[in-house]
Length: 455
Image 1 (spheres, rainbow, N blue to C red):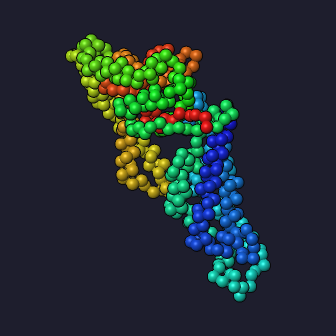
Image 2 (cartoon, rainbow, N blue to C red; image 1 turned 45 degrees about the horizontal axis):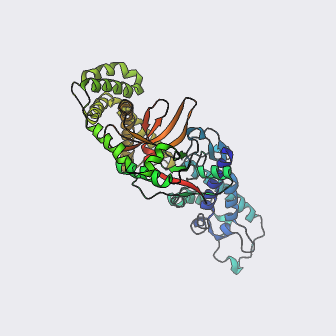
């Protein structure tokens, strides 16, 4: 099944690339701006000759997608983390992983094709100079080859190719999809065609309104037939296929009366989030959360963990107040680590940008945006480390929505809608049925959810 899906993914990626590179206008600027009609279209006394058909055939043959069994998943997965593997673009034995390498490959292919076409035309008997068919044409043998390379390396050329990938789900040639695609698997498994049906439009956030709308859609639309329905999600770090537990008694009870979610889940959760934790409870959660957050940096855990003890809560706090106190301490303790992470990420960004843009430095606004992203990522990782403790130690009501298909003989991970103990708002989470440990699922909450149905 995985092989069939991977082959479908490969065919889609190859097809998208072939269309983008062989459309009539992709390389046709070479004729008017670089090599001229004679070299591009061939001599007027020939049919289907010239550099154009030779170049397009060479691109189709020399740029190939090869399977890489350990390539991380980027497509719609049917079984989560076990779906690694996918196709990667190659030119000969050289793997192409970025825009710069893609342009280099096109230059090499085009120069080789141009040299061959120039040599072919030079070996033919010359056309009389007074032949009206060649008036204004420059013989191919008189064309400097550097014009070909200059044309392809122009930013406008590669941007014209990238624009053809701007709409839809197609990935750029150097970053093809990988992993199994849910629809393809079900089509192969059932022998029938499937299609995706989108739910009502929902806000693209992970907030309370989004999750409330998502729960309602799951209960009243996706699970309306009380069957073990399949759903696909598409989004950043959220490409997956899984099943709704619409046949469970709990799901049916909420589906029969969607208002129960507000009275049994959201309402009590908001009340709980507003309660003060005892001094002893707040202190115990603080110590556990600090240790979990600092565990990422084991070399500083002992010393800074000791310093953090000077700030153990000595008064009652709500979960939100406690989380803010924990955040203040981790921000201060991990300042050097945070700045180091931002510097490394920015350095990697600059190096990649220069590689993809022929040595040019990135614009200041793009570098600022990358540094802001890196800081947000670092803070998000640390904040989540402490938030895990609060979610585990302050359980709140939840509805089980779907079986993620992730797990092993000792665990089974479910998608749940639960109240965040800190904010009191509805939030999509993942929960291990065995350990009852919860983790955030914000990327899935933001993703596009679609029910897969038979045509």
